[in-house]
Image 1 (tube, rainbow, N blue to C red):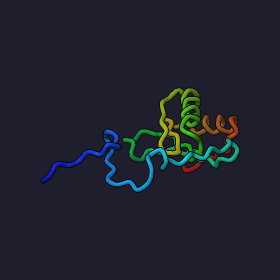
Image 2 (cartoon, one colour):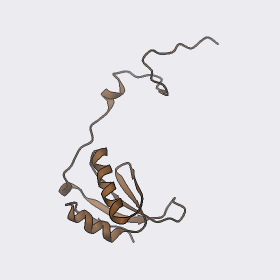
Image 3 (cartoon, rainbow, N blue to C red):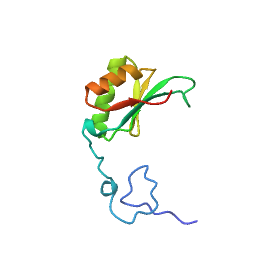
Image 4 (tube, helix red, strand yellow):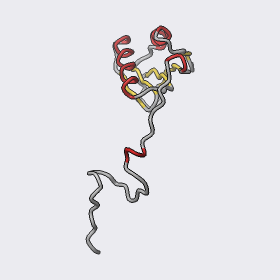
Length: 116
């Protein structure tokens, strides 16, 4: 076994074996930013994979990460609970479908209740 050469361009923790073109910055795609009226949101509750805890799911959103976090903070403050951003959806702890529906429609997002 010979010694492995360390690449000069590799960042710490980068496990990329081969990259044909450019850097990571060149491969990133911008997130489309839609105005509130162009979204088609669904609000539903779920308990799957959460140890029996109820979570309200809202999405899918087409917003930048910054704006999605701002909206999450507003909705968490309204409900007085915690929450998180998962991919293009918001998760709010607890069953707050009705509160969230009225707030999102006030903010200009067309939303519908989904599921049971």
